[in-house]
Image (cartoon, one colour):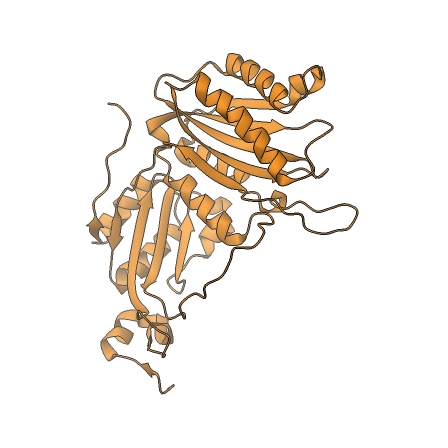
Length: 316
């Protein structure tokens, strides 16, 4: 055993098959111990599970943030988790896509200025009914930037889809200086008023995550040089998008083993190799799944709710 490592028999026995992963590391750089303590955070869009608490990594170095060039894996993970945390039933939702036609700015600051110009008009026009929105910058194969937006309307105050699309198309057409381009006016904006159908929130969230979190469209490549172009931030949340935490649960090693087994065989597993692969050896996972189903399993396994769920913001 490494001279800086110690292991308590109780910790290793509790970890069971995890074996050496439960060793408490105490190097000179450590500030917290890595210990086996399974916890599950339940969100409206699914669960985020961790088998361990703490970190045995050295403290981060002080550094200056460099130029952002697309959607990094960490940024994509944060985006998925924020999407899962949105309280979808508290708002009426519109899914919006804004595209350019023949011309767009040479620098990412130009694209962001177009979005800000557009959304200032939208927020002013719907100041009493639009709670907030999430935006995501992506790139088409022709390297043209385009935006996906999720608009969260106050419950019962979402404009009709066709009327909203027509109004937004005119405003986006003007915001990017394409007034008179009838083709762009007809195809520059796509607006869908999202509905909860028989597929439930999981189907709606899956569709939005698929479109908003595409990693293959998160970078812009200069066609002449092959260089990765700077993009600035590729997503953000503006205003009061309703978020909800449905509770955090803690369990023992046996509970963790059974919970991972249930998740791997749970709803949606037949369509997801990632979900089917989940097992007790994993240090953690994030999966979109029915939160009420997950809470039912946690209760059945005797998990302890250490953080009570927040009430939904929907008016009832």
